[in-house]
Image (cartoon, rainbow, N blue to C red):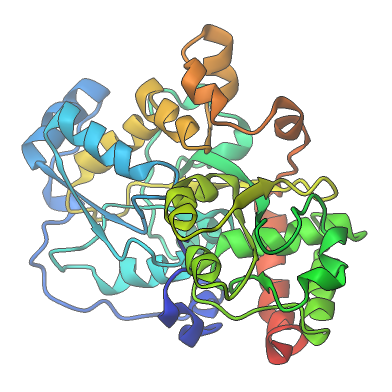
Length: 379
């Protein structure tokens, strides 16, 4: 699972998010071996950007796993259409690690052009002046909460927090209340919400189910604190690994991520069932931006255009990620039937709660403050 699959993320603990949120300055390493945006002509319109991007011939991404939201298919389609090769550094990096790497890789051959950041990490990235301004050609079709008012980022897709269960071991789960039943003791895996947006979403969803709100997710921390103290939580290195090894039978992630791991876990004998908790429907976006001093600035902008295009959006939807232009595409008929079939049901889509930037920042800060002492110390 992106942003929480690698063992070293557990070893990192809270450091990454503290760096991102509290603005600790990190020195950039390396020399000027990568060409910066200031040295490169940037197109003034989509036609010019496309021409120059093809000349650049390369796109450096960070934090893009192939199994996440159909990115593997997007890479192939983008390269086939434009002839631009894609290289991904640290595909499984947490959003906090992405922000660190954007700074430390500056001047290196693998200096990133575009990240894929969890919703609570856009503000820290803006404050560090890492994001350049670019308004994609279809920006007017994006909901206001899926684009930065200053043009620093777009949220090309979003998902809804879901609960995956190995039904060969425990019953399917449809609500957070279900997880308090003894049958789930020692079988629930949650990653580190101080590092990854999907795990922070799990805490927020649990909060909504237990008297909390988008302004106060402490009830979600309290819920996981109870699970930890009562021995319900299991240790693992990531969603797929937790299920395939039997370390856990219940995992928490975005709906589209379960599409990405289904084949892998079912080959291992897992009977995967996924439901959105009816008592805590919470969703949010991941944001993309052409980075300041991107070595391939035109390719970076063309990638944003691709993700928001009908082709890119349909790939997202086919893999369960809800494209930012979902409503507009459905209205004009450019969302394919195959793509729409991959999305959550209409009722769930209507019920998704989204935090604003301020609420997202408060969520992150509260989790950083309380998760260690109230949950992690008891796992």
